[in-house]
Every structure is written in C-alpha cells, then in structure tokens.
Image (cartoon, rainbow, N blue to C red; front, top):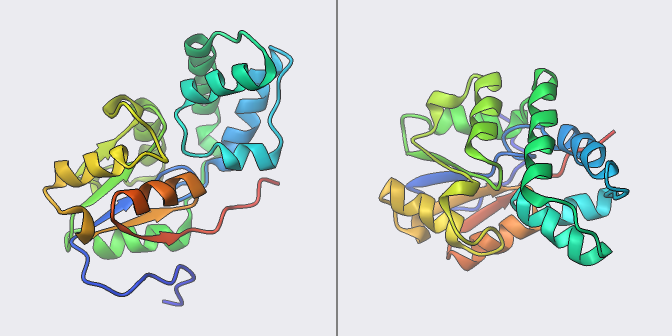
Length: 198
C-alpha cells in the first residue's frame, strides 16, 4: 500500500484515532451543520476558524464563540440542535480511506481506540455508517473526560482503558489541537491531512 500518512518508526502497542476528519470524512458535514445552527443566532464560522476549533467539544466551542462575539447562545440546547442536524446528514458520510486502511491492518493485532470531542451517540452513528464499530475496543467521547484537547486527558483516558502505557501509543489526528494533546500525553502521532470542505 502506498501510504500517504508516513507513520513514525516504533513498535506501538495501541493505535488511538481521532474520529472527525481522521477516520470519518465528517468535516464538510460538520462545517455545514455548524453554520446552519450558529446562523440562528447571527453567528458563523469561516474555514480557518472551523479547523482551528476542531477537536474541542461542541458545548465548549459554543461557549468560546459566545465570549468572542459577546453573544448569549444557549450552549447545551444549540449543541443538541447542531448534533441533530449532523445525524440527519450522516447518510452522506465517507471514510478517510488511508486511515481506515490502518484500522483494518491493525485490528486483531493491537488494540484500537477512538478518542473524539464528539458525543458518544454521534461517534457510534458515524462508526456504524462506516461499518467500523466492532473494530474499536475503547471509545472515548466528550462525556468521558473533564478537559478536552489540547489537554492530554482524552488520550490518557483511552490509554488507561486499553491498559497500554502512553509512550506505547500512536495517535492518528487531523487537528492541531489533537496533535498538541498527543504530544502532551507523551505519545507519538501521525498527522492526517485535513480534507477539503468543498
């Protein structure tokens, strides 16, 4: 396989995968849903802001936008609405083929985990659409940690649940905040090129 990901050398005992933009090409769908939801409150995200916020849990993103724009958007309600819009669009979901190839290659050889800023329901819907749910021993979603990426807690939580030392994990990530979290966790990482939104 001509692998565009260029994995670092090493004998890894677990692979930890971000979901959105890494395993699942969800970023174009999320971008549309974010702007549809935010538009109800006269707010929007351009592509640069959208990718800069990638990996931050939905409620935290809305709270951040409230502070930046002096708004009072209802964070939890708007997060639920945005996720509902996303779930309706999941029929359009496609995999990130280069990453999914590594999921299939490693499955059964080493344990695998999903580590995402999305809610667990959203993660399970995406994995189900791609037929990948059974490939992952552990799923860590927004409900499973107190501090999201770039804090290392999400990745450290996954490593602990897999019973693997952080230094023995390889992280697959498309977002800069996720790479920062992997580094802070003491893990090796591979950067997945961000997909086009158009």
